[in-house]
Image (cartoon, rainbow, N blue to C red; front, side, top):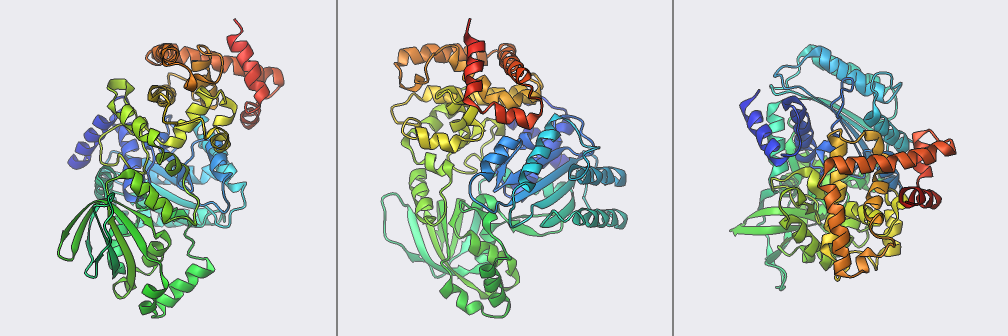
Length: 571
């Protein structure tokens, strides 16, 4: 194996000490991590995209809707229920620790991808079945833009495809294109250099140099270290906005840098086509007068003359502008762009800037919760725990990018909201798909300043533990559908009413300690999950429901919660 890849693989193993995997399996996950989080600039848990079985020809599948990784139909339906014209992407991975490209293995990989979208006679298994359901959910919606398809075959060698393999790729591109279900198709053989650069990018905070000769100092503010306004060359914008190049040397827009949803950019829209056409036809000089520009927030700015070194930065407004510039990058030197550069380490003020510069857009739910003072306290408390109890609440995308921690222990506030809905409000039937409705209903009763951070930490830990038991095959993957019922049962067996958040600290501690004792014993928690699942299986069986999608719909009924509660806790 390439020595640098080997060293990075050891680092990745140290970052995820609880994941017991063979070297080849871990390389599969690291490849997904390097490409998704490094090259494509996403922010996903690669372990969730990794296929755990021996599926035909495929090691990983990442299905993203509006940038959210969806591994089951509930997650997909939840994202698709908000807004319209969603953008979706299917990314397939196959990784080999050998340093050569094998024609037979690549052919098998592409056959498996084709089979996933057609007959499903080759790719089978519980995990794949869930992903096929996600696929069907996406295509069941009438979006204006068809999904994109990316296929990556990874090795530890150069990744350079021979003429014969390139012909194989082109043949399969044509075969997939004939299905007429994709907006674009990208198939690439990836070598060690791309994986190495992707891994470095995925584990380091963003850093770049910016030439800003027309910078004017903005008025002082007690929350801002320094700030500048002016205009820069479009090439400077692309310098900070593009990620690591792929195997063909093409750098893509780094989506992780944007708060505003980069997937909403549509080069075929009449407005964007008109702007791109004007620029291509030589009207570069007008751009700076017509465009609102971009706003960049950086945790640290180091200025030396006209050169600004920015670290841990985000483009909080200007994704449309950046994408347009990426489409005409050959003209970037002759285009000027308005720019605001803000140096600020105060996370709450940064959040307010993001919301203030995106008033015309829907504010992300995680950003909504991130503004609450309680969330900062919870973040600090979770990170301060030791050993297996340590968890990380990600209030800002890629907040822990440059910290060597287990990706599986990172939870977004929206993930925590789902667990809290099941465990504290006794809403297991709504947690999977209706947590926005729960937010609206319980917004005054969750993440409040007077709440006990220990209970929310308990919810984060419970969700992590459940997923860990599934990943390590201690709990059958078919039980994932009952995840929130299992979390509900953890608290319900020790506390009768859905008001644990508001009860006395002494009573909360008693419940918390009882639940912790279960979570700390994998066998005991596994047995409890199986008990929960058995009761639900019985309810389904008596109702004559067998189809998995029908089961998902059925367990969302309040009557099922009542019947499950009666059976589980009647003794």
